[in-house]
Image (cartoon, rainbow, N blue to C red):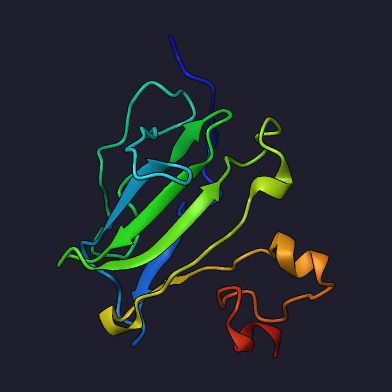
Amino acid sequence: MANTVFMSALFNDVRFLTNSGVILNGGNVYSYLAGTNTPAVTYTDATGNTPNPDPITISSTGLLLNEVWQLQQQPMKYVVKDTSNVQIAVYDNVPGINDVSVPPSSFIFTTYLNTSAGGVISFNIPQTVAEGSAGVTPVNYQYAPGVVDRLL
């Protein structure tokens, strides 16, 4: 029987790059239950029948080899590592797109970039709950919350 799954709010059609703009070739994305280090299953498509490998490999083009779909009512934590297994980023409490069973306020987008490893993720990060509560509207959404350039 198929699982009820929703596309992850992250990673689908996202190109992973280093700080110098070079494609992150062959890194990995590990999947965990939100707020934990407990491995969790994600799926390759909307049917929820075929699990992704864990970790999910980043291709030579900087894209994931598979789509990322997660179970309904199951926010996720994703950890991105390079080919040397150096942690580049952590994204926690990530809901599935349109999963109304997860309250929007639970989506706290926390990002930890390891600049010594040279890794960044190239995509737009939505306004966080904290930014909204503070009445702050980012101008440059490609920067992580807490980075001054996000507001300039």
